[in-house]
Image 1 (cartoon, one colour):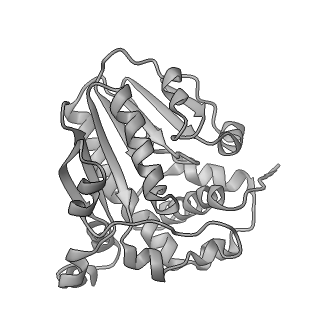
Image 2 (cartoon, rainbow, N blue to C red; image 1 turned 180 degrees about the horizontal axis):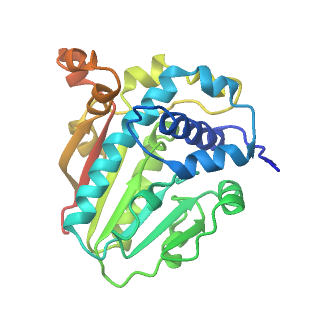
Length: 267
């Protein structure tokens, strides 16, 4: 029997992104494999018709999954016994695709979101759930941390925040962990201004923040240095070969959606 989920606004995006990963997984030449996403979609009583038609959302989700999966895997292979903290996790399942590559994995999100996650995913170690906001510094108290290397993932969140939120989130990270690396997804201001997610039209979820490039991000977060950046065009190239050409257009280089790998300057 399917279970009904009632979500609106930003939390609704977790259901849409889950569907995108499940849909891609079922393709013959799938670029990602997320069997748990397929299982969860089959259990959900939810109208996915809008998500099914929202090609831009689907492509964007798969592109960033390709890029982030690769980055996280490479990082964990080089850093044994890492504690991973997945901010705004929603119904993300990367912890299962990276199984046995980390010490502990903490999925962090708002209580309303974690209530839904816990309905479908039982996580009691080495994967754990924390039902708190990333702007609530007490979430750190729920992490079993003793100076280990920390990898913090922020995916699909910053575009719904404001600069003040970004600064606060990183302030908590900075004072809580000695050795920390952050992988953060950002959206370009052009996309924030001109693109709307058709699959959640009518909800209160709207893009509100973005940065043109790493230079802008560095000014906002002066205590973190950018060690690496990957444009989501790299993921799109695997989905649509035409992006091999589009990625060379100057405007795409100047202002882009991407993943930045940041490290605290004292780490």
